Image 1: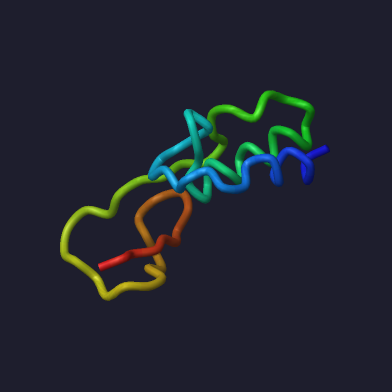
Image 2: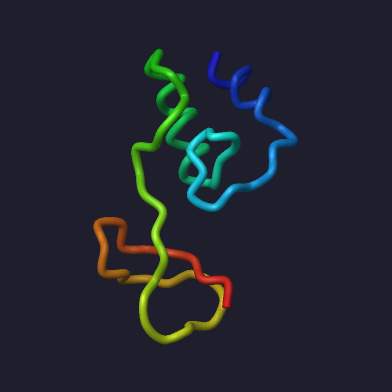
Length: 76
C-alpha cells in the first residue's frame, strides 16, 4: 500500500516545506510514507524542515546542527 501511494506521487514538483499541499519536500514525503504505513492519512509531517541561521556554509552536509535532528544540508 505504501509503495503504491509513493509511486502515485511521481512527477509532482519539489516544494520546500511541503507536506502534501499540493506536493512535498524530502522530509514531508518520508513523513507521509510513514503515515501511510501506519494506516493514517498522508498529509502533514512528523519531522521538521527549517532554515539555518547565521553564516553561509559550503554546500553539502552540516553536522552538529543545534536542533533535535543534529544534521542538515546546505545549498550555498
